[in-house]
Every structure is written in structure tokens, then in C-alpha cells.
Image (cartoon, rainbow, N blue to C red; front, side):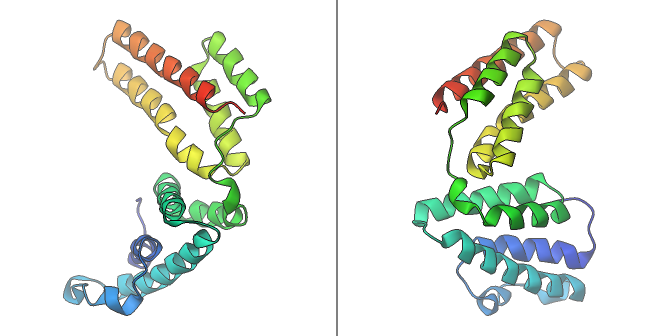
Length: 190
């Protein structure tokens, strides 16, 4: 979550709960242990809860329960992936295009570029190219599902740097990621 002041920590927690619940604030505050919480945190919680409820209403537009749940998961993913300030800015911009979130198809140009980079064994650049496409096109749900690819490569590189794996293991795992990425591209062609 990062290092935030208690009021911001409370706001983030309130946002998560407000986003993921149809309860009203009063019903939720009955469960809080007030003596263990700071006053600033509680104020932030109330503000965040109301923000979460407002976002939930916007996500609900033209969405069945399954789609709403997927949009909520996507929003929570963004909250975990970004700093809170960046999250607010990106979400505000993306809420205008919530209908794009569920799209999964990659354009021919992106597919061609990614495949070319993979052919040149530039896995990191291919991964970033696709992530950048999803972010720019506001295809956030697909970006959330896709995010494990760059995370896997980062973890693999970290393990290699710390000498937790051999070079052969590294190369094998990198090839698995590359193969899985090719399958992802194939499944998400337009």
C-alpha cells in the first residue's frame, strides 16, 4: 500500500469496502473497533467509503452482476498496482470509458509488433508494448488479466539476480513465459 498518512490509509480502506459492497456506511461502521483506530483514519475511511460507493454506481451502468464484479476487481487491481494519487487520476479518466474495459482484442499493429519483438527475443519489450496498448486503449480488465506476464518475468529476473535459480532454469522459465504470451496473443487476436 505504501507509506501514507492515517487519513489516506483510512480513505484507501474505505474506498475498497465501499467499492465492493452495497451496504451503507452506517452498517459498516458498526463493525469497526473504534478504540483501536485513529480519528484521522476514521475520517479518511468515511471519505473513501463514499468515493467507493460513487465509483461502484458508475461501474454498474449497463452491467450485469458478473460484469460489475469484474469491473470492481479491475478497479481494486488498479488500486494495488498504482500509487493512490496515480490511481485517482487514471480511474477518473477511465471511468468515462468503462464500456471499453471488457474488450480483449489486440490490434493487428500491436500483434505484429509484439510478435516481431518476440522473434528477436525481446520479451520485456513485447510485454510492455501490450501493456501500454491496454492502458492507452483503456482495456483495463484485459490488462488486469494480462498483468501476470510482466510480474512473472520480473520475479524470474529477481530470482536470477539473487542466484536462486540457475541460468538454464532461467532460460527455460523465460521460454515458458514467451510461449504463454504467444498463446495469449493468439487468443486475443481481433
